[in-house]
Image (tube, rainbow, N blue to C red; front, side):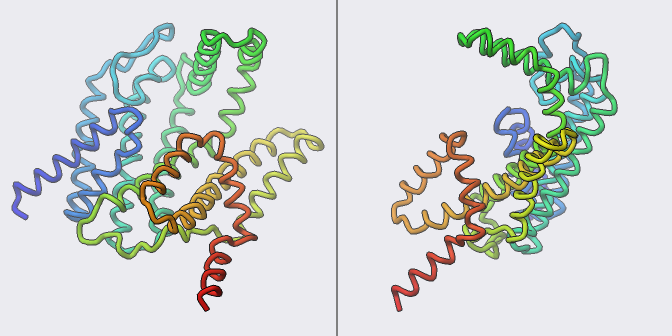
Length: 342
């Protein structure tokens, strides 16, 4: 590839990542352009695209109005993290804005490196998860340490609860429900801060899995993912289920016997983190059986239905993943088919 084509590929990758980052919900796809450049053009060009985009953001955030009065509604500046300006110092808003992009960029780069090394599924996603989770957790810890007169994360969470109460009031919710929410705002903030590790865990896990699945489908260069076998065979190690069981036991023991509070928070973090992993094992079971459906449109409709009704079926999918530890649905199905054929 001549230098002009390389520069064009790097520039387009950096620009696409920046557009996705500033887009709102589509920010979760920010790693994809960097992953694409890394896989199709090489590790070095992927790194250059990430560095170029980060440098642009450093300048943009340095020039943006990052200080907003505590009684203001927020900044009109559209990039991520700026909405937290009433609650944090301007220096942290700059760090959070650039660091949040770095979180996505690291995910894309490490996924690209795993593709080049032809790593198997769990190692490929696991390394990207650890690297990006470390970046995101560092930003949160730094924000907790810096704080501001706006109250830091506590002030931000309190404002979120107030906005939820206002939305419920506009929707005609009963005054008792609204009053309960506002009266217990302090306890809700404490709980949300306590379970923040598992929230970051789930968010990072979802980001990595989403970009692995989409990247594997849309990036065809150099057959980068031909070594990744059927993802519907994904399965957690069987002993991991005892973390879920132990977390549940600890939760009830602390709620009814010990009353320490800290054990209850720790157990919630454990159950949420491992529950998210078994959610994907449950999805793998569903995907395994959907492979037998001949019409692709029916498989697509099934996945769309899961997304639409996720709040309703989510716990059922987690339960399916946990039950698979003992039932081993996929192995039983495989044995049944081969027995019939025999």
